[in-house]
Length: 427
Ligand code: ASP
Image 1 (tube, rainbow, N blue to C red):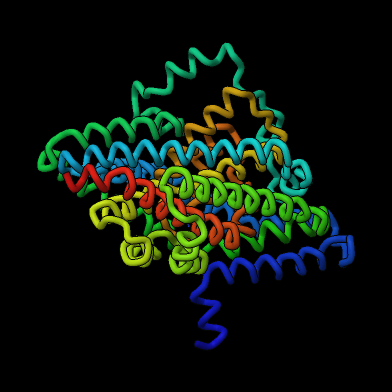
Image 2 (cartoon, rainbow, N blue to C red; image 1 turned 180 degrees about the vertical axis):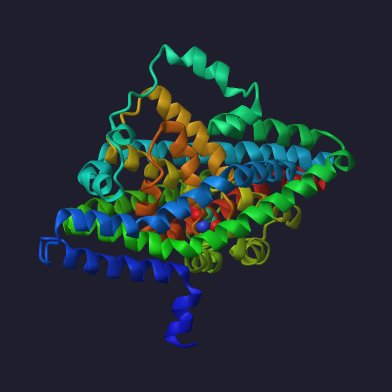
């Protein structure tokens, strides 16, 4: 394959290239080392460069609710049809929720202690995108008085108005209620809606993949704007943010080691070394879905998981169990909140935890989806979605790492349920 073809085929590479070119172009126009373009001209120039970012964000806005809604309903209904599978499904579902909550807690602690967002100068982003002061003003988090109201409003009285008002948490809860009801009803009676939702999911993923083609241009525009106005120093905080995410993902891997040793009762090193194939494939493709056939093969052939367990846990886990993604999304929200000086109260942190738990379930297992779905959580706490473009510029390496963690989580879960259900299933 020629270099040109390789670049055209790999979106992440295009993003990295536009990031690098953006840095140079930004430096050339800025007054740190470059020509120091006059402010008015620079503003006009960067406002044109921000067009792709605005288009991308509008497209995401357009599809995010149907995408997450259909993904959550489909994931819940895939819990199983036979009675035996329903019991196993409930156990596995509970395990997935617990492991995701652990991942989210790790994220909350690390992101609050390290606070990478305080290292990056917000004025860069504010100037580049002409965010009105209103959008970036210090927003008060929820207060104790808000709790009764918040709890009452969490169940949407009118799902359509929740949708119109962008109340993401209510929409996610609505999806959960619909999914659970569809799960208990006879399959034939819910099949028509399930078919429609599957079509909706396919269409929205298609639009998402198509919109992603704009990302290299969006990143270029954002980086040129930031670097030309504030200088290369504006990028330093990004390194700290990436380091914090990778550290958090490392902590989750350690948790998996403990689960393998104490819950699944397996030799940790031997088990982990058998996971190498799907782990490296997940790392290189950035997609748990694309890795799934290998994950399944490794579970059955190398880890000797009972096929009845692996055939359920791996596909189900691939769609709903994304500990790496949940950790990443929470860290990214904290990072952007710190960046935009949005104070997060305990109640808003709880809202973030619940939203990201559901958002990670609704994240499709494809490259870069985690950062797009992040917009759901951002809307909930009032963070300007333009921050997403900043995160996408350095997302590839984080996507690769969190996908590897997601896949490792599914394999760890199958080891746990292999041990727990081996006897039950054979009885
Ligand atoms: N790429 C991830 C996966 O497939 C999802 C994400 O973007 O977080 O597991």
